[in-house]
Structure formats: C-alpha cells, structure tokens
Image (cartoon, rainbow, N blue to C red; front, side, top):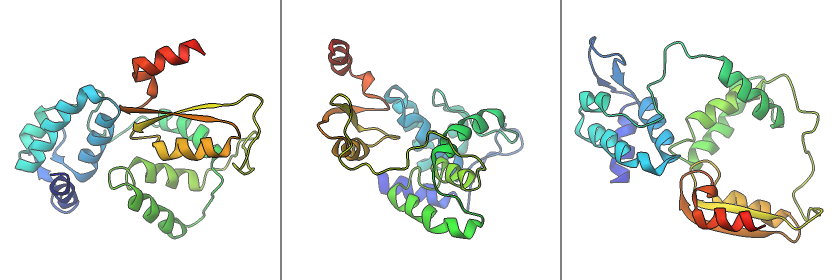
Length: 207
C-alpha cells in the first residue's frame, strides 16, 4: 500500500486532483499531500485523519480530500506570513556551515535529501536548505569542531525515539558515539519527542 500511495503522490506532480472554482483550495497537489503527511507524522492521534486523506487520494476523490482534515494542518496559503519562517531560518541557517551562490551547486545536496526520504527530502527540508544556502549571517557560537570523543563535564544521557519523523534514532546514536562516556536510551515510540512516553518521562524526572 505504501508503494501505491507513493506512486499516486508522484502522479500528482503532473496531474493534480481538480476541485473546481467553488473550492477554497482549487486542487489537491503533490506538495499539499506531502505536507499533510509530514504534519500528521508528528502526532499519532491524527493518523486516522491522515488515513482518510490518503484514502481520498487513492480513490481520486478530491472532494473527500477537501472535507477531511488533519489536526494542525491547513492547505498552504497563496500569501504566507513570512515573519515566522524568517525567525526560524535566522536560528537554523546561522548554524549551518554550507553556503552556495548558484542553485545548480545545491542539486547534489537536494538529491541526497530526496534519496534519504521520499516524504520530506524534496519538501520542507529541501526548502530550508535552499533558504539557508545564501543566508548572510552565521552564529558566533557555532560549533565547528569534530564530534569524536568529546569530553563532557558529566556523562550525557542521549534519548532517541525509534519512530520519529524529524530526529531519527540514527542521529541519536551518532551523537552518543561522539560523546565520551554517554549512554543512549532508546524509546520505541511514535511521533516527535520521547517525552510522549510516560515511562521515559518518569525516568527523566528521577535524574
């Protein structure tokens, strides 16, 4: 089923599901479905709503897609508020080391993102990378050393979630391996943040 959905979403690049002039969103597009999936992956309680959206895509029913909603997700506006993204980029881009003057130089980076994740690789992650490529400022406190055998004042506890759409467990493992004497606590849960686990929350409260 996942391969079928992926194939259908790819088809939307060329042939969106038209809704007609009476709809507020006009058509169901490739980016719209991708954004809905990413929004839902953060919160497991929205997955039943996501299933309705995907079923509408599978059936080619644009009206059903328009009437179904994922909590926390809304179709992209034609005139988004740029204040929020610029604030976020000011934090994230200032920490990133890469800078490019030509978008062609970014193509290998974007291809690597897409190869890593068909859900997000060509979506918000790629958009942020493009925005950061020509960001004019860098953080003064940006760390530029290696992550090999870093000696921390106290041994670190690294907590990772096994099914996290934003911060994968592999990243937690990489961090733990770079911090000397650290321990990795793996939470086999869903969504973002291991704090969603009552067991993890109780454990951390004891530390």
